[in-house]
Amino acid sequence: MSALASTSRNFRDAARLLNLDSKIQKSLLMPHKEIKFECTIRKDDETLVSYVGFRVQHDNSRGPMKGGIRYHPMVDHEEVNALAQLMTWKTAVVNVPYGGAKGGIGCSPKDLSMSELERLTRVFTYKIHDAIGVNVDVPAPDMGTNAQTMAWISDEYSKFHGYSPNIVTGKPIEIGGSLGREAATGRGVVFATEALLNEHGKSIKDSTFVVQGFGNVGSWVARLIHERGGKIIAVSDITGALKNTNGIDIPALLEHKERNGSLSSFDGGDKINADELLIHECDVLVPCASSGVLTRENAGDVKAKFIIEGANNPTDPEADDILLKKGVVILPDIYANAGGVTVSHFELVQNSQHIMWDEEYVNAQLKKYMSGAFNSIKSMCRTHECNLRMGAFTLGVGRVAKCTVLRGWGS
Ligand code: NAD
Image (tube, rainbow, N blue to C red):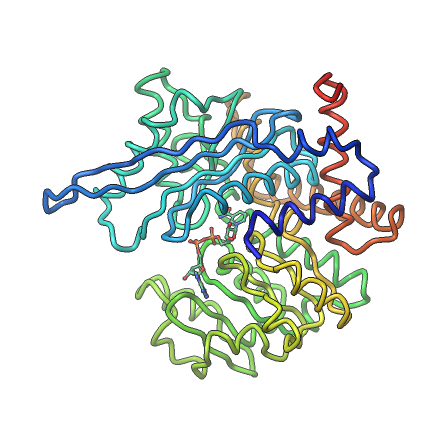
């Protein structure tokens, strides 16, 4: 099932539980604005290359729209649409004052030099600068982009609109980024995991983990779980997967990745097949790579008792049904990976006040938001007698619907 079909199905199920009027449902599903454009750059060897860029602004009833920018070969119109919609529910679940958006370029960033990436980012920004703005739409990093990408966007945007570092979040500390932002999504995933395990009378220290993806989110998840005494028994990235039932030495793996750029050739574990990773015996599986990795083909073989969705949309609805029937407890993406947008909110608060919070304060506030959202989701689960995904969707969709009606768009 496509990412958009899967997200929209979850929305409709939540709308049914909330008894939402069909006109409100239609208005909430329809994107506010979609932009698709050509991004052509000159490569270092002087040849021209063209890519397709997207920005989808899904909903702004709760505030300026917010969402990452992804550089990945699989970026297409449908996926960006689905991810923009997820951002609308996610910002509402953690109750930060934003709507949802997403953007990206269908390219392979690892095949581009730094100067090519900079030129591509500047062309992308030039094409959308009139459609974004601090009160309209504020981009952030996602797969294949990082703080440096945000610095280029901010610089290019500032050429047209005056100095505007707060046009993006996830930017470098030196130009107004927040301490703790780089780790925030992973840290939020770990706070969410703690809340869930705690509820089931378990702890990170007594559990085994499998982490798919070792980029920004996955590597921080692995590092923070390791620091809390959890045992990571298998990890993967795009170059391969490895396992070690005694627990992988995560600090050594991070050092290896820093030196070599990937996990491949790390000798602290045995190589396994990438597909095997997702069905490896463990207490907690944390997908932190791409979408649609848990499908009806592999869900029946998953052995984890808990799944924490660090990635966006990693579980197809058919897989969801199979896993729920097996008794697997799934903490959904629109809550589990909301730590990034939560600290992006803190970044904008600091920018508007021209102050900088210390990292301990950022992390403590993040914990407060993640715990608060967990309790609100549980309360929705009790009200609607539903699972955690529907608890999160009814919470997010309900809050957005309420604002839509209050602002008078629902009549
Ligand atoms: P990233 O580009 O930093 O890292 C992605 C990682 O996934 C890399 O290690 C890559 O090698 C690996 N990967 C890609 N395809 C894979 C595959 N088929 N099998 C195994 N590994 C694979 O991206 P990121 O920022 O860490 O984002 C990861 C996921 O988290 C995405 O779904 C993204 O939308 C979501 N997310 C990210 C943020 C954020 O703040 N960066 C916030 C919320 C959600």
